[in-house]
Amino acid sequence: MVTQGSLIIDEMRAWIGRDLGSVTSEVVTQRDIRRYAQAIADYNPLYLDEEYAKKTPYGGIIAPRLFFGVMGEDPNEPDLRPDGTAAPEGGTTPPMPESLPRRMAGGSEFEFFLPVRPGDAITVNRRIADIFARQGRTGSLVFTVTEMTYTNQRGEVVAICRNTLIAR
Amino acid sequence: MAQLCWEDIQEGMEIPSLAKKPTSVQMFQMSGVTWNRHRIHYDKDWAKVEGYDDIVIHGPLHGNALMELLGKWVGVEGMVWKFAYSNRAFAILGDTLTAKGKVTRKYTTDGKHCADLEIWVEKQDGAVTAPGTATVVLPSRG
Image (cartoon, rainbow over all chains, first blue to last red):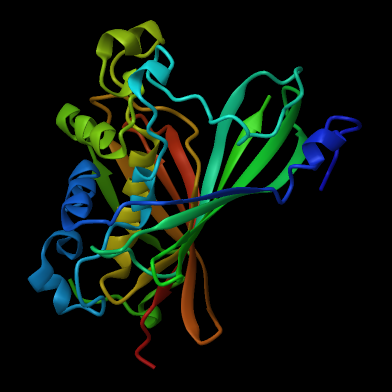
């Protein structure tokens, strides 16, 4: 981990490896998968047609691989900001230096192991995988990498996703 | 379309591109299914207040365009194993997103026949909205 002088302080470093807990979804239905496929306008019959999907190596309908996007926070409307976004839940993001007030999404990395099928209940466990600093073109940047491990009701790992948030 | 096999690919080859032009109905569906209440994706007046000319295409729609590109290329017997992308530039209603890819490496690992790709989404003006990489596993004729 590259540190920029005192930018990564002990209070932040203590968050590396921190387990932020797990949340389990309701059971995924064929309708959830169909609506996600419609939302992304990908009408692959693997997602929509059980008779077709049965004849493929998957043996039945599966969800598009980025289906995990439906597992978000859903606060009540009074708890949303005026622009409709949700503030991160307290205790789920490490403190950042006050000199870096802006936030940017830094990208997502996925590793896929198993598909999601109707009838699955998906558990997501979040942990802070890393916090590091870099010198960018316009100044210092601090990167926070959150790792999400998705498992199904049989305890099998379905996918791992790492999201990076940049403070600048 | 015939199933792609590992023997059919070469390093440096470009894969067939995929054009997506999200409609306002589609964007409504994306907000709904992800329960994303961010107004810039459905409220044109609010989008204009934030400086956009129209409602903004969701970041994951750029990612899903890349996954659909790869899914069509690898076919039902291939698999996208690893996938990474970031949203670098925004697109709005009316923009066309074209997902493209190029094979950068062809190899085997652990008994799997793989290819690494550089992938990206471009708008109609050529600006890259979402660069990324992927590793796919393909069937082999042996």
